[in-house]
Amino acid sequence: MARILFENASKRYPNGFVALENLNLEIKDKEFVVLLGPSGCGKSTTLNMIAGLEEVTEGNLFFDDETVNYTPPHHRDVAMVFQSYALYPHKTVYENIAFGLVMRKHPKDDIDRRVRDAAERLEITHLLDRRPSQLSGGQRQRVALGRAMVRKPAVFLMDEPLSNLDAALRISMRAEIKELHRSMQTTFVYVTHDQAEALTLADRIVVMRSGRVQQIGTPDEIYEHPANTFVASFLGNPPINYLDGVLSVEGGKVTFVRGETRLDFAPDRGKKLLSYDGRKVRLGIRAEDVDERAEAADGEVIGGTVTSVLPVGSDQFLGLKVEGQELFFRVNKDLRHNYGDQIKLSANTSRLHVFDADSEMSLIG
Ligand SMILES: Nc1ncnc2c1ncn2[C@@H]1O[C@H](COP(=O)(O)OP(=O)(O)OP(=O)(O)O)[C@@H](O)[C@H]1O
Image (cartoon, rainbow, N blue to C red; front, side, top):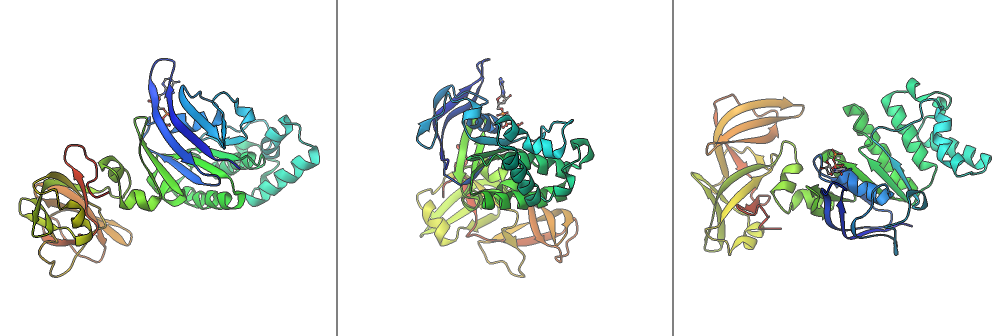
């Protein structure tokens, strides 16, 4: 059992740089939490603090009800898988997986049982006598996972474990990591800058920027209700589009206005905006939240000139110049468009996002 709790926790490196500021985060027992954010935002620092590789310089870190601020790594019951795999090159796969248990002086037959059990689950039994140099990247990654698995840790920490793999393997390994979490019934904390990885793996995602948490929530909450433009932009492919304009409220109807473009918010969205008449806002429209109908209703039309048509399998990315700004949408590939065409798309107004123009915080939560 392991619940992890950061309470007002900060990390100041010896050179004075504050890599993490006032983190308050509870990771529940058996939860799969993904720390997501751009390079340098403090993800690895947070993970290393859980592992005990970095000290908490302010605040507290608890495992269950005990402070572990000063508990050394080997007393924390955590196992960590790194991006680099960190395998011993001169040891066989078997010896690599067994290493942690040998160091802890486990009985030989127990070690053998655990190594073979992990190898079987990871489908690498036939590789047990090989050395790391004789393995593919995906196989090395499995060995690194096996080494962590045999320890049966209370907390499993992973720092970008898939980023050295090619795209196809990354997707299949994601499924394996998810299955591993299900079968191990252990707390997982996973670091990545890859939004797709976070959305597929996490029970909850912690979005970070410059050492500060931006939002904590389920993948759905983060995607559907981004707290600010940073979070909104970080998830979505192609990224969310923005148009700056003003809100107009008339007779209970809330409309976004920018030049000729007028979009009426669907009532459920609009009711949260009734007090914002005249407010300068940044409208967010996700790439997939448009469709093409013969007649888009008034208050739903996004019209513009086609600037690019990029097929991506069953869909296409469509560049559209709207009010002097280039927006990108994802539409069905069967829609035929050419560069320079004047077209009208219909916005799904129940899914529009709206942010304050200055603070960039969501106005609809
Ligand atoms: N030992 C250190 N001394 C000073 N600053 C450090 C040290 N280690 C990391 N930093 C800084 O702290 C910030 C956070 O680093 P961290 O490794 O946690 O980022 P990250 O989000 O994991 O990034 P990446 O995805 O690139 O690994 C960075 O700006 C980094 O330069």
